[in-house]
Image: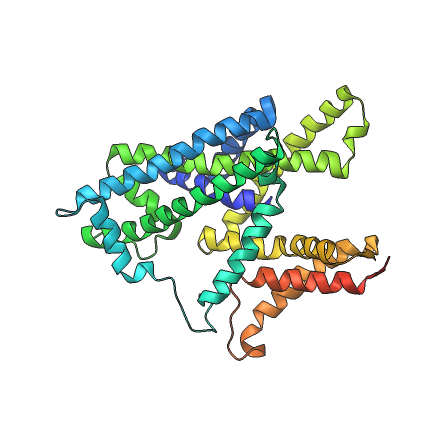
Length: 353
């Protein structure tokens, strides 16, 4: 829920900046309209709709980035697309290797945390796994994961390069973007890069957020209906009635979480998303590793308390890390610490079978 809200929050901010503010429509109404649109098309056809709409949305997203890169390259007098990439590559904006072990950006810290983050966010999330489960066979699901992984590397490099290009273009054009943050891309796309880029950007950013929120809404409805309420044991007519109300309830809850996040957020959404993932996915990671490594029987009634206690203890450790660990600051490796605390806790509340 938190992950989907963060992603959808980004498109809500852009739409507010581009359209709704001009008509005096408040942010909460913007969020309600956006979530309602997602609810309508997921309500009608579920996962089948999502598979097709995600394909279209991903296409729009990548095309928007490519068009932006092309436009920026033409706005430099002597540059082509490869020249713009070269500028980013040679600048400080492309730095990957940070060797200060106390820094949140320390390379090995980020690298190892990234491995666990990928396992947790992709491998243990119903949101993403449900698409593999719709494949006709295990082989097709494996092919889907491999193709996705390879393509994802190139898409991430493209997006990271675009970030550098936007900052360099702003500096080149004398545009002040020091405090733009998440509004950097909309600021430039809607006001400085021409109508074609503005339209492509709006389509792309909307597609990106919708494609994550729609699958999250469907997966939460499915998981809550089957795993918590055991609706599979009921008659089809009764089951469908309950699922419709659950679907609507999760849509309303998603809108509330976005509005609350808008009220309290004070940092970049992507950073906030991964920080939140470190807390919300940690217990899941701990449970998964425990189930793989050990054949022990846990005391089930204590597991929910442990799943709440592990993130809380992680937060306290992170808050006082400088004092406790000689200036060391936690970054995204909070997920590993959280999962480890959960794993140790499970070991202590379990016994050999």
